[in-house]
Image (cartoon, rainbow, N blue to C red; front, top):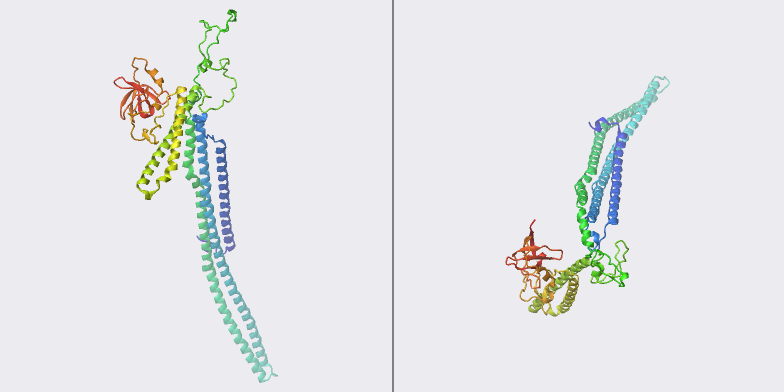
Length: 530
């Protein structure tokens, strides 16, 4: 069924219906546009929320940054930020695929509908014009026919009048004949106009208007199909990002399951353990004996407490819940408790060693570049590198001084500085003779005594009894073991592990021949007994 057949006489209804359909498209576009604005505002608010509560940690030294609860909260904020991005993507895709596309299609439909309505109006005007011509010819035919009848009656009356002359009779007859001839012509013209109008009317109602109505029907059906696609896209646009949104939500769930309260407690201990011993009993001062202080072998006798260990402020008492003033930060971290000081010095020493290694690599690269320039002058002027080489050498000397400084402080704090990973030896020209494990060779025959491991290792070997091995390790790099308390090893060598790394970067090992010593933990792969 089509409009041209069934609704041939409902032009006004069809015009109103098609206009209403186009208005529905406009209304839907406006609806989707406002939905995109809601999504964009929602995404913006989510981003601002994540930014507002973001744990801004400018340094890894922040104490909370290692706690799983803080890390998980940071992960949740990141996932929410990604979630906001997906909401923005929904808004963008809806705007592009629905709003812009439908708006463009709507303009095309409006122009097409306007064309069809103009064709209908033109056909209507043509038929009205033909009808006016028909009506005019009909009225003329009617008028002339009446005139012809009157002329015929007058001629007959004149012919019967005895007083009329022959000339009057002849004249009346000629006039009647003339009028009859004109009336006949008007009749023929009217018949022709009628035939023309009937033909145009048939063309109008059976061809022109049905075609226009069917075209409008096709236009409206295409509009409906496009609307249906727009409705589906409204859903599919969000469905498309649902897997990613699901991953964001899974990430939030994972952040919750990754929290380890026991590990957080251990981190708090590790970060805040002072290394002090608990205070002993307060000594009994027996003024009855006339002495200032008296020691007793009874329960009043006291072992040395933290104040004695510090060697200062002996007259002051440590209270757990007293409000402590913020200490002045010092370069050697002496403001920190022993355990925390050792860790910070170890960390700082590793940072300086890494920086030193970069400068050494830079110096070596400049030296090679200088050699290339000297051998191939066309590639560059060796003198142009002098300032860079000089600056690099100064940086190396400065950093070497800092390494020695932090090593000294670390020795005072009782640490075992594991710096061989980043610390090469230098000749007088600033080039390094012994490379790190990441580099090439190590000159074991000429160790630098300035980088000796501290003599405190000697105390670990006073016991003559062999300690049972707790596992074994395989050397990944050569280690000279030239410093006191260490033991040499070759790449691939398997050694017995006697003592685990206590957090200072060193592991105690033993060879089959009984030789024992310390090696850098990072130089080996461990396989401990369970």
